[in-house]
Structure formats: C-alpha cells, structure tokens
Image (cartoon, one colour):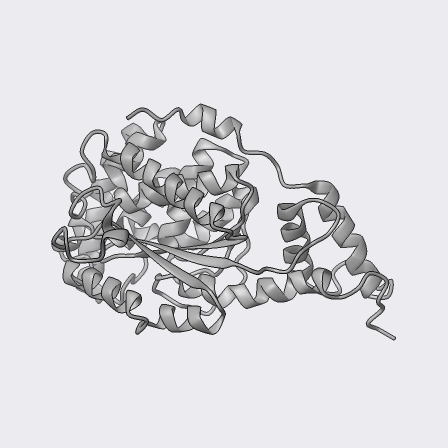
Length: 352
C-alpha cells in the first residue's frame, strides 16, 4: 500500500477566519465593551470552535466521541514500564465493560467510546470483531533495537486510522477526542518527540506509568538507543512511524490528518497523542489548526510537543496516564466556551 502524503497535506484547509471574527465581536458585546479577554481562555476556545464550524452561526456540541487506539510495545519488555502487555488487554476489556475511569467520565459527560485494537498483545479472538477488525499485528517491535513495524504495516495502520476518522465523522460526530491505551507507549512517544524537536533522552522523559529511579535509567538508555535509529529517517514521516513509533502511533497520525481534512476538531489527550500530532504536523503544517490540547501531563516531552504545535492545554491537572481522561475532562470547558456563543443571544449584555 502506498499513501501519497503530499496529496493528503494539500487537502487540509484553514478554519474559517470570518467566523472567528464574528464570534469575537459577539463576545466583546457580551462583555459590555470591556475589551478582549473578558472571558479569558473561554474566548480563545469559543472563537476557535466557531472557526472549526464556519458559517454564520455556531451550534452547541452535540455528538462528541472518544476514540482510543490500543496497542502494546515490545520495548516494555526491556524494563521501562511498571505495566506489562497483559495490562493492555485487561484495560481494553474493562473499558468496553464500562469499569475504567475513562469509561465512567465518558458516561458522565455524554461521550460514546470506541476502542480500536490496533496492535494489542492478545489472541486474535480476545475481543469482539468490531474492536479488532483493524488489528495490524500483535504488539510492536522494541524501538530501541528493532523497527516497530514491518514494511507496509505503518501504511496499513495509517490508513486504518483514516478509516476510523471517516466512520466516526460520517456517523455524526462533531468533536472527536483522541486517546491511547497501551503498556510502554510513553517510550516511543518520547522517541518521536525527541527526534522531531531535538531533545535528548534525559530531557524528554518523565516517570511515565510511575517508574522508580532504576527503571528511569533503563528507559533513558532505551530512548537514547531508539533516537539513534530514528534520526536517519526523520525526513520520511511514514518510515519514522514504522521505525520508531508503532501501529497505534501510525493510526493516530492518520486519524488526526483525516480529521483535519474533514474539518472536524480533535481534542488531544496524552503524550502519545501529542507525539502523533507532531508527525501529522510534519506531513501538513496546517493540520494543528484543527486540534485542541485537552491537558498536559508531567512528561517533559509533552509540554515541548504542545509548544511546537502552538497548542495551549485547556487543563493542567498533573494527570500522568492516557486513556482519554484528560481530553474527557477538558470537554465540559470547551462546551461552556461554545455555549457562550451558541446559547447566549446576540446583543445580550451580561454586565447589566
């Protein structure tokens, strides 16, 4: 399978600047002439969302959806995480059963959840067919010593991510939340961010799943070795995903790019989604215009990636994990910002 990345990049358009200006004027009127910034970050979120929608009216958020790409990573076997591959399969089942924090939060804010098994280390029939139909392989290779994916697998995963985006948008999603789920994912995330931003191993990583000092040292060494393998392929985003990412990172990159093409906003979650966003930015510099950073984790590379993407996180609650939790917590804030425009009539002066 060959994917023409240049052709995809050319299809990403800018959000609607006229709609952004219209909403800014609306918010200035609501503030009673108090000037820009009366509503703080809500103003930025409201104007950005209006630009996403375009047109002359802004509609409330009605059908948000969370998509989580689940995968294991061979580097986890090298003692870089407190989690084993068995954790990923258990977490997939628990999420599908509604018993994880992410599932509980999603129910609380009215978000449907889709879990995509893209490379979980489990038997082919471990989950329902609709969960695993796009599985590319069973786990990824250890990025510190081998390619994450075999030739052609990055393209297949990338296309799978694009297909998932199309399916969700075609079913009516007006906002998509992107999450990752998998043991060892912060290591390839750190490799991708380090390679794309010029950070070295010690600077790009934090404590991930809650590792101790000895594990941190092993993780740092693994990332150092993986960065040596990543740098020669920096000029080829698809090759970079195959060498240093994994099926989940390739799928999330395709997902993000296709959402930008389809003019559908995405709320990013953890450091893994930010790493994928950096790769998508390499493909299309306009694509970050369609994304919102839900939160920032304590991982140093996460803050660096968001800075490179020019995205300011909605929340900073020091949440280490992924699984869509930060994106879910940010959604009510985005909804409140949109409702300032969508539900408060034009001409209303809230200062009187």
